[in-house]
Image (tube, rainbow, N blue to C red; front, top):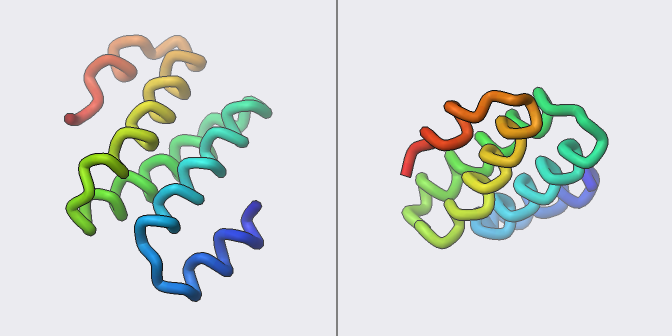
Length: 82
């Protein structure tokens, strides 16, 4: 998947890049690599905010919520920025 991210970054399509980062985040959640999951979700969220696409912000926010819940940090999970 990280190879796909490199291809998307070359295309300069920031919406698709944001989505690819979220998919990577979800993949890392599945294998319990939570720090990487958080990193990719935060990168995705930053891009979505940069391109001012609120719909694109939903996926990384959900990914962050899932990650923090998996870590038992429920307060962080429910207090994510909106």
